[in-house]
Amino acid sequence: MWADDASKIDMLAYRPYADLITEIAVSERMNPLTIGLFGNWGSGKSTLLHLIEEQTSSHADKKIAVVKVNAWMFEGYEDAKTALMEAILQSMKENQTFFESSTDKIKGLMKRVNWMGVGKTVLKQGVPWAISGMTGLPPLIMMPNASDFKSPEKVQEQIEKTQKLTKEYMEENPQENIVENIRGFREDFANLIEESSVDNLIILIDDLDRCNPDRIVETLEAIKLFLSVARTTFIIAMDENIISYSIKRKYPQLDIEGIDVSVDYIEKIVQLPIRIAELAESDVKNYMLLLIAEMFLEEDSINQLIEKLKEKGIFIKGEIISGTEIIAVVQNEISVEGAKYKESTNQEEFEEQIQIFNSIGSIVASSLKGNPRQTKRFLNTFYIRKRLAEIQKIDFNLSILAKLMVLEYFDSDLFKELFQWQFEHSGTPIQLSMLEERILNGREESVSPQLEEIIKNTAWSGEKVKRWIGTEPRLAGVDLSPYFYLARDSVADRRLFSTNLNQDERKYINQICNLEANKALRRKKIEQMLEMDEVTRNEILKGVLERYHQDKKQIETLIELYNILPQYKSKIFEEFKKIKAENVTLTEILLFQQLDSDVFQALKKYYIEEKKTDKKLWDIVGE
Image (cartoon, rainbow, N blue to C red):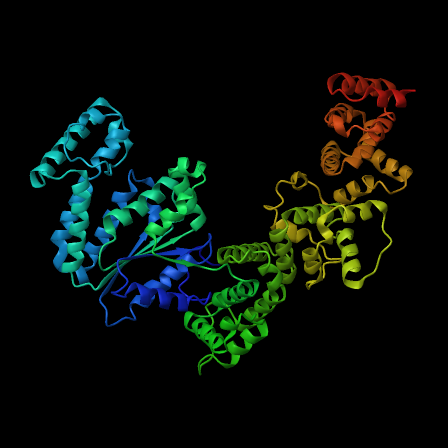
């Protein structure tokens, strides 16, 4: 399994990016500098930040201090600006290597930041009169939480606290107004870095795009107004689309006038934008195979594997790594002692799973939209289902499990339709067998018009689906029910899964719902329901109703049930009344005529008077 966060192993070949960005960040000529790492959700921005942090240690000739900040941490704070500044100062205070002699200056700055927070929360809680006369009061301060204003006593307590802080601060800084306070913090922060032993302070900000729009803008403003001083480099990982949206939301009037303020705004904040390209299909497949290798190999062995592949130029050339090549490198080229496998894994299992994902890797990659995080999630789901099957001692084939998951990912509707097919045919859908014969062998089997219509009216003829069908292993004749049992969370909206049916009962439903079968035989099967116990009979009726909800042609079966099973007349009659007016055609009216005359007339009256269907249609049948 893989955590949904930054990886410590460079499986995306991001190391050259990290080297370049670090080289720029530590350059005296370039700072102060803000670098924007732009990439979509899950594109590997956090991994790249981790590699940059790692790479700073290789510059032995430079004294580099690195501060990592997760912007999402500030989501619950009243003001993101002061929260960010406090987090950075706290990290600097804890860094005894470079800021040991600057502790007093850091404390002074933290006191200034703490004082800055009184105004905003007090104003927001409706007591502006308490601070309206306080000269120099800035509009930003962090307060613990809104509960400090829930009673008159609490309000008074905060007013007194505000007055005390204001008095103390004004005694120390009698001439400062808001603008001077901002300038003063910036100057003090610049002096702090200048007087420290650090050559460069690199501040890495992650997860900014997870914050709400107001927090995003506040954080960017804090960087620009307070913190961007000599010897500092900010590297911000963010989704450019989300940042743009947040800025437009802040300045909607300009957006309405057709001015894209977000472009100019981002350019003023970010001097060096670096965009992480979406992974190509070949990159995603390579990444997936390396993730499999990481699950089995010790860290030193996986790193050696990656280095050997780099030496072969695979990443630079954009080539797809084959499973056979990975296995060969692991067997023959990793250290004198050979590859080391993690505890409870072995070489045989490793090679089996590498080859499984090698065979389906290309089509999986085409479904994951160049996104490393989605790749991890696909594999996590696969291994969760694999383990569930093992715990429950379900006999299954890993290749089939993987192949079905590919369909689930790239077209969930077709996956659910396949679930329906296998449900109707006791786990072995004849529709899929027919598709395989047509696509793989080019043979046109003789099929019923109903099946022919299903194939023609769905997306099963698309090129991607054909490619999926052609991927090994073949599924014709395979009982798919265990695999859909493992994937029941994905088909939960298909209510058939809630019916408590065994295999014999499912076969029975298939027989009475087979509209192509001999009508006399179908009728005889339905009559057998009279001899069943009530529980079984009720469950079968539920199954038939669910079939009807998926295929309205099963109205013929409902009419047969209505005529033969009197105990269900009321329930089935209500189903007839639920048909949408536009779906009541001459076909449905002719079928309704098979009911008792009184029932037919009741439906006629209901649909004409209540649902305003065409009276002429009903009159034609009644003549």
